[in-house]
Amino acid sequence: MAFETRSLRFRVLLAIVVIVSVTSFLFAGGVLIIKARLEAVIFGEMAAHEFAELTRQLDVGEYQESHLFAGWRFYYDDAISALPEEIRKLPVGSHHSIREGDYYYQVEVGQWQGQPAYLTYDVTNWEQQEHYVLSMLLYGLGIVMVAALIMGISAIRAILAPVQGLSQRLTEIQPGERSLRIAEEYRGTEIGQIAAAFDKYMERLDRFVERERSFTSAASHELRTPLSVMLGAVDVLSSNPQSAASQRAIERIRRACSEMLAFIEATLYMAREEAMQIDQSAPAPLSTIIERVLEDSADMIEARGIRVETHFQGEPAVSVPVSLLQITVSNLLRNAIEHTEEGAIRIEVTDEKFCIADTGEGIAQDKLQQVFERSYSTKEGGTGLGLNLVRRICDRFQWEISIDSHVGEGTTVCVVF
Image 1 (cartoon, rainbow, N blue to C red):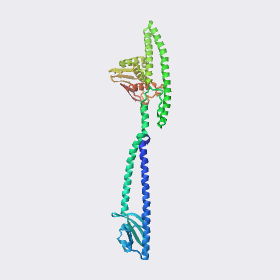
Image 2: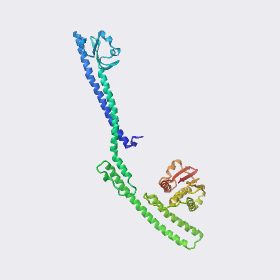
Image 3: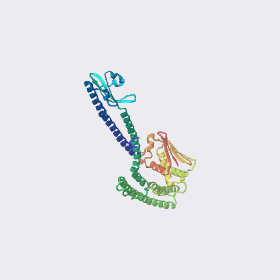
């Protein structure tokens, strides 16, 4: 997973641990460098000076082994044979911490009268103390790492507390609350900048919602008025004697106007998040709605030479506004009719779902995920709003909608309630 996708808690903790770790290892590295330089000065220069002094004493005949300090040994001539092979192989110069068995030596290698000479100094106690200090340093690094984790977790709680508080505050905001501003609650803190940005967003959102409310209210009012006039005119026409064909046309006009009014109410219901309810106590009659939509689409079905098969094997108990269920059925059926030429459409209804299957042109597999997107349409001049509205209705009532299609074979759409 990319670092950018990690949680803020993880990133802060990682930053603290990395900073402490790098600082600790740099400190430890500095200690080791200082140790090495001190050893070079203390032991290297001291051994070199002592070696020069001992060879001078040999030159003037003043050398006596008893003059050596405790722990020092000077090897020359035949005494060199007593040295271990590892020490005799050392090149000229100072050598620190040469291990021989359980002991450590500072060895100075030089020459006297053209022959090798060796000065050794037992530094075992020094090395043991040094190993003890290095062990403590290593343990100290581990302790520092653990302390860094503990302090990092505590620091994260303090750092994230304002963010979590802001998150909780935003969660408590209800969709219906308007003109709400929270920047004053966080004035003088870093979170205040986020709160101020949120307030600006809320201000723009309030203006957008107000424009949406004004439009939907005006559109609802302006559409209801002519529809009411049309229904009144239909009532006048139906009160006069009419032929059977005219009476059927008048009834279709009446039904269309009523459905338009219901559609307006339904779309307003879908568009608003607040509790705008449409009373619907009894289950919507799905089979009746399907038959009514088929009747209204009879001319189109006949013109395209489509054979319709209906199989009503049950009646789902769907307690939703009839207009919303009718929108769902009519949009799915209209798409099946428009994409089928001289084929068949099969409508199946059970207690749990209904399916519409056609033998039309079908949809490519890579386009199936796009058919419910707004403004996407495979039909020339199509708006793509129909199936998008169907998807929104299904999401609103938690219905499961699925589509299966193969090019040249047809499409099947199922809605599970």
